[in-house]
Length: 290
Image 1: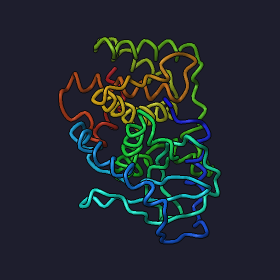
Image 2: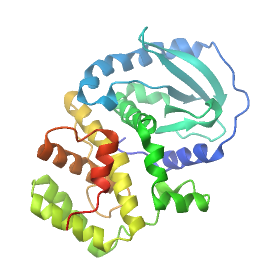
Image 3: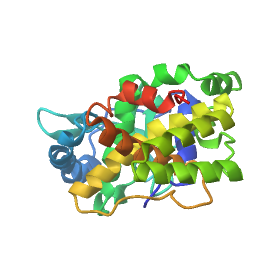
C-alpha cells in the first residue's frame, strides 16, 4: 500500500471527533499478546536502523492492532525492548483492513497510537509504514496542537465543529493556474533552482487565499515530513521511494510529495536543522520574501 486509504483517513477523523469512552475497556491478558510478541518486538530492531536518521524516529509509540472487531492496544516497554498488551476495546468504527493511521484514542485517555491491521507485519514495507505513523506521534507530542491552534483554517473549522477539515478542506486542486505553478515548483525544488523556487512560492502565496495557504503549508509540514522520513527509511532498507501523489489530477496527497521535496531542498541548502519540528513548520509556512 502506497498511501492511506480514504476509509482509513475518515476513520481517524471519526475517532478523534467522537470524544467519548468506548465500552468494554479492560486490562487484559490474551493469547493475542503472545501472537504478536515477536512482530512487535521487531519494531525495536527497526528502531536501531531508523533512529539515527532523525530525532522523530528515535522513539517508539503505542501500537493498536485491530482484529476481530477489537482494538488490542500495546504499549512499549523500552527498557525491556518489548510491547505489553495494555488494554482491549471493541471496534465500534468498523476499522477497514489495511488501515495505517496515527490518532489519539478516545477510549485510552486520548493517548496517541499507531493503528494498524495485522497484515502490516507481513508486508515488505510494513514496518516503514509503522514508523511513518510514529512520525505523526512525534509531531503530536512535539507541538502540533499549538501550531494548529494558530491557524485560521483550524479555528474556523472548530467553530463549525468540522473535525474532518484536514481531510476534506476544499482546496482548489484542479485550478489550472495552481496546477501549473505547483508542478513548476516541484521541478524547481528537484533541480535546486533557488531563484525559480522563490518566485513560484511567492506566486502561489499571492494567488491563494490566506486559508488555502495555511492548508497547503500545514499538509506540506505534517504529511510532507512523514513522507520525507518514510522515503529515507525506504532507502536504508532497500525499498523503492513512495512518490504517490506526483501526477495529476492533484489532490491532498500531492502535498505529501511537495513537503518531501521542499524538505530535501531545505536540507541541501542549509545542511542542518531543517527537521526541527517547529522551526521546520515556520520555514514551510513563512510568507515568501517576494
